[in-house]
Image 1 (tube, one colour):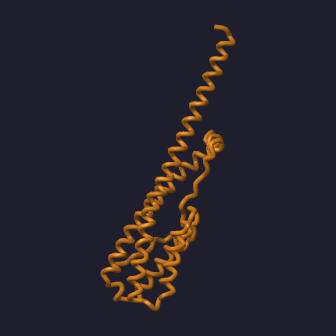
Image 2 (spheres, helix red, strand yellow):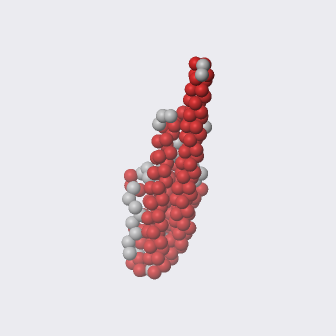
Image 3 (cartoon, one colour):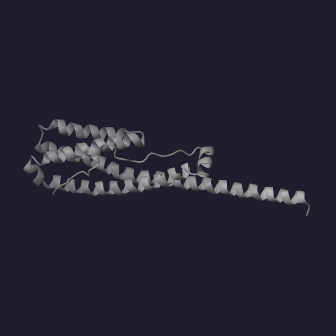
Length: 188
């Protein structure tokens, strides 16, 4: 073979390897993007269950502590804010507000022994506790997948491929406010 032919074969082989690497990296980004979307959808299911539970809690408490309307209104407003959020950052902020409002609602129940003894209220507390555990687990899964996706976007050569194909970092679903870092306390 002539030296020119050998050089041409080497150039074609290098280009083919680069194209295959680009295709592999692109496909990996697509897989991770889909995993992020799936993880968020799973978390969203649990968040919606929680949102659906809140009106029942408010109605139950309202029967025993109707004059505590300020606390009840804060719970409803926080729920509405969280359900109407359009971005992940707003959703996380709404979740912070809702967790704080629910914490206040359960603290309020301490002042009403009849409410604490109400079987419907106790059942709603148990449901909320299960949902809170599911939310925590799904949030952990979502954040793990997002961390991996974001890392792939930031490291070389993934950052080049991500830039070419417009893959952007996704936000973590974090609790921002220190006072809301505690889990909603549910007592039986």
